[in-house]
Each structure stands twice: as structure tokens, then as C-alpha cells.
Length: 204
Image (spheres, rainbow, N blue to C red):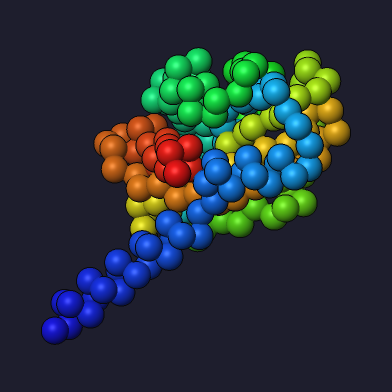
């Protein structure tokens, strides 16, 4: 009986997380109400503000902050081919991938990358991050993934999916997505959660 109650509680939690996530359909509906875009520029993932809740690894935080953000960028790019899977899923007439334009921003992780707690990135912080990007394009719809927390206790990655107007940097839509981290190794393990969360967003 006790096992059944625990199982039901876990399932309820899982469904709550899924239901709390926005979807591509939600995003396009909200964006359409604010303007029309034929061009989408995908900037990939920005790991500069992610926190890893993994207390046992805290002594390695500074070293890992210098190595893993770039590896995570590469993993997401490999597992979610921008000019293949992502382009097809988003379905915009004009699409380009320009992660290189925010690369230095996206790997500038906090030396205190690893902590013993989860993280929260505020709306104001997201706005400041996007405003600081030096982008070549002057118009279009931008899309960036901003991982927030990699949680060892729950083996879950929490990531913001953010659409913004490239010209004004106004945020048009944002939502958190959740992905299970199941691979081996510090690169694949955490970045796989970003991949899974974004896949869910794109496929629903």
C-alpha cells in the first residue's frame, strides 16, 4: 500500500512538471498575437547562468566551470542538429543558426558553478542576458535556450526556452522545460537533460 502511494505521488509530480511546460504551439500562438515573423534565428544554448546542484563535486567547481560549458554547447549542437531536426521542427520559411555570435557569453560560467542547491534565473536576468548579446542581425525572431539548474537529487535539467525580437531584444515568450538526465559522464549527463526538455517542447 505504501509503495502504491509513493508511486502515485511520483507520477503526479511527473505529470505536473510536464503540464507546467509550455510547447511550441503555445509559443507560436503568443508570438503571432504580437507580430509576424518569417525569419527565425536560433542561437543555441547559453550556459552562463546554469547552476549544478551536485554537492559532492563542489571542490571541482572552478575547474569544471572552465571546461564544461563549451562541451555542453557542443553536445546540444550534436544531439539537436540545427539545420536538420531544429529547422524542421520550428518550420519557419527562413532559418539560421548563429550560436557563434553568443558563444563567449554562453561559456562564461560562474566559478561557483557547482553548489548544493537549485537555481532560479529571474525574468530581469534573462532580459539582461539577451540585451548583452552582440548580434549581427537587426531584425527577426530570436530563440535561445538558457539552462537554469542541473539537479543531481532529481537527475533533471531545467531550461528556459526564450523567444525574443532580435531588433528590440523584447522577450516575446519564455517557458521552463524539464528533461531527464540519464547519460554517463559530466558532459552528456547534464546536457542530455537540455536536449530532452527542448525535444518535448518542439514535439508538443
